[in-house]
Image (cartoon, rainbow, N blue to C red; front, side, top):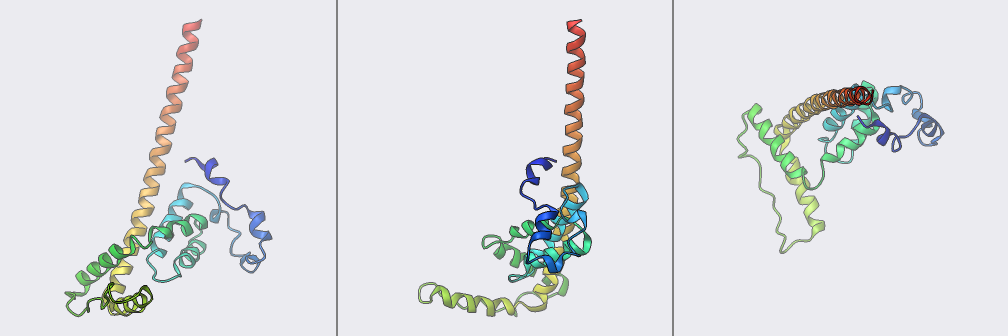
Amino acid sequence: MPRKHFRKYLPDHESIRGNAYLRVFQPLLKHPNLWHLNRHSVAGGVAAGMFGGLIPGPLQILTAAILAIIFRVNLPVAAVTTFYTNPFTWGPLILTAYWIGSWFTGDNGEAVEKLDFNWDTQSWMEFLPAFWTWFLGLGETFLIGSLILASSLAVLGYITVQLAWRFYILAYLKRRRARQRHQVDTRRESD
């Protein structure tokens, strides 16, 4: 992989050790896989980020970071991967998680109330409490579906990165062999 392009954006061990806010966590942040770019560490970071991304609320990056530290995978990759959940993707992910959960629990969705909100008469500030009330009404069906979806996305992300990294290396080796053959052929022609 083009690691040299990503290294300039990743923090080094000295900047982590010098950060006043992270000094408390310094013993946890010493493992090299938390910062190095290798196939297993990056794939694990993507898996941690995919799982952490489905945690509701502002705990997504924290969850991904904790998982990265526990499994000793790339911490920055895990944190950045959580951004696949955003205001545009969150709605379809909620519906998908609820659908998966209803498939496992047998809930047909009749108990879920519709979102009680009217954009014409209510303001944006009234939307958030209404949405939160609706969201909590999804209950255990959503929770089970979220765990299954998060686990599935984590496994899929891990496998995808492993395969992409392997195909990239195989293509690189093929290009290198072709370059070497071309150089040998060029030398023979010049002799």
